[in-house]
Amino acid sequence: MTHKARILNPLNSRPFARFLAITSGMIPALLAATLALTGCSSVKTTVDKGPITARTFSFLNMGPRQTPSYAEARKEAHAMIQQAIIKNLAAKGVSQVPAGGDITVAYIVILGNNVSTTSLNEYFGYGPDAEALLEKVHKQETQTSEQRGYFEQGTLVIDILDPKTSKILDRRTISAQILRNLPMEQRAERVQSIVDQALAPLQIAH
Image 1 (tube, rainbow, N blue to C red):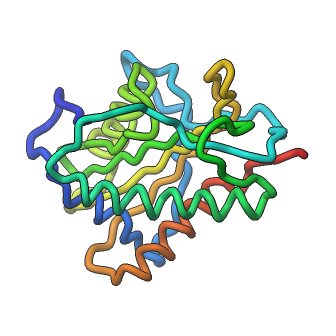
Image 2 (cartoon, rainbow, N blue to C red; image 1 turned 180 degrees about the vertical axis):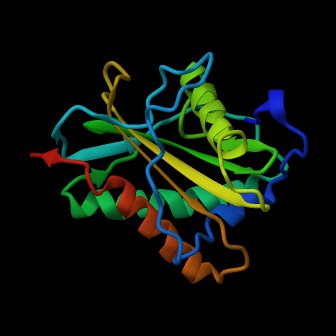
């Protein structure tokens, strides 16, 4: 999904791979949940309803989708993100199952620079929430940011859902600047670090 209202220089598939190269020198920060934005001010970047009882989880299944021309780049990005989530939740005593988990995990990657914002949302779902998050991050990065030089930034939003109601039990949002041209091993390490920091406050009960 691309935020069309403010696109001046649309991104191609390369930023999805670039997101995986997060610099270790940048301290990731939670997006401010109180940012005001006309039209989608109600969207929350953090949700915490307390400890979640779960032993298994499944990733959100969006069903059959048309494969885009840059599917390989997306496949690589999803593989790294999902592996990082699997490893983090396993350490909390929650293992992945193909379907029917106690909880459902959904996530969206939002990538942007000074003028444009796009998202990788195959495992987040379609609807007003995804669009509102995209618009909110776009406003923060391109309209309220004090940065004047060129920048590229990635934002990861992870939702823990009740599979019966699809209600959000926990949402964690984290962002960091992007560093290009890191070796694949270092990319995976940075993605794991980002996911671990995002899910650090998540409380699991058994």
